[in-house]
Length: 166
Picture 1 (cartoon, rainbow, N blue to C red):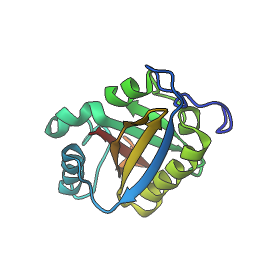
Picture 2 (picture 1 turned 135 degrees about the vertical axis):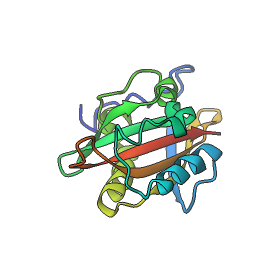
Picture 3 (picture 1 turned 90 degrees about the vertical axis):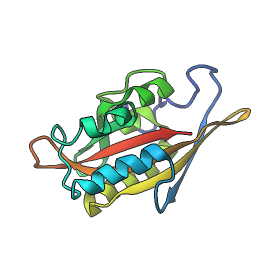
């Protein structure tokens, strides 16, 4: 499926209403879960490794909010390697193994890929507020934290993506 094909989050899985997403970058996390994830990442000396640091007992209460994305090619797309139950629930289905372009609308994909590639190339975190708007107004308002994480074999940089709902 390409980014031009229909994504799976164009409609709310419960109400069926059309959804629109807007994303804005923020300087620091404000949601308590997002702050906790970022503090844990910083406490590890920013040397994060999939399988060693995530999953971890220290942040086990956040596991349902965590997702891991692997770049495909030179960052043309990313694949969801691990998806927490919270994102699967909000989207309405299991998305592990899917590409970002298969999950989100094209307009969202462009910005999301830009942020994911920034995390991978710069090795720096990205924080975002997201508004999901339906026919009757705001449906969800998650806060997102994206930090670099090394692949299990430590040969590639992936992205640990935390989604925390207000």
